[in-house]
Length: 219
Image 1 (cartoon, one colour):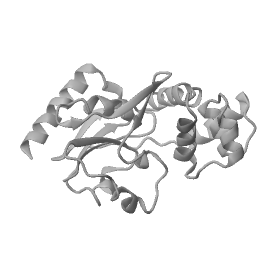
Image 2: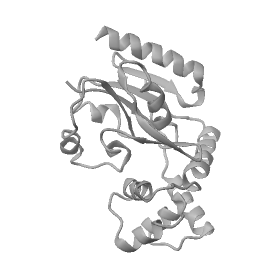
Image 3: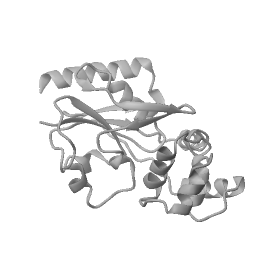
Image 4: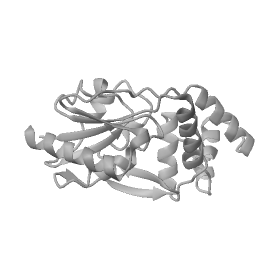
């Protein structure tokens, strides 16, 4: 039987990094990952399905996952109430988003600095970022451009058919940021554990690991 721990979170709040940490628990399958300019990039068993834009046929795609006896940790922008429609015996970890205006502003600066201004080393990673943020595959000309060094902000310019300049990247980010509404605000439940984004550190992650271990041992 497949067993999953879904780490649900808003963009930029560190869900991939936390997923890797939790996957080091002895009952989990280690989540493969790489570091890019301080950002964690994971390779989950669903090929980042739950980090892309919402897809109406996600259940059909997710049902094709290869079986595994270990617990697999999956980073997700999908909410627990959506995922439970298919994974009714999963465990959910939610990173609660910041609420105060100045904390959200700090998060946006972090996203711009650590995501939009950074770059991937390999072409397959750039293509993955393109698909994740556009919901479509790049064409031949776009792939050719991405075969050269390009930031994620530059890829956003490609997605939006805009010239790749610093000013354009800033304008696209501001437009994206206007629609950014951090909205993951949950309380602990029987199969749902929470951690506050603003309080994530070694101590709180350690406590979360202990709670997860107790939960797994009790079911």
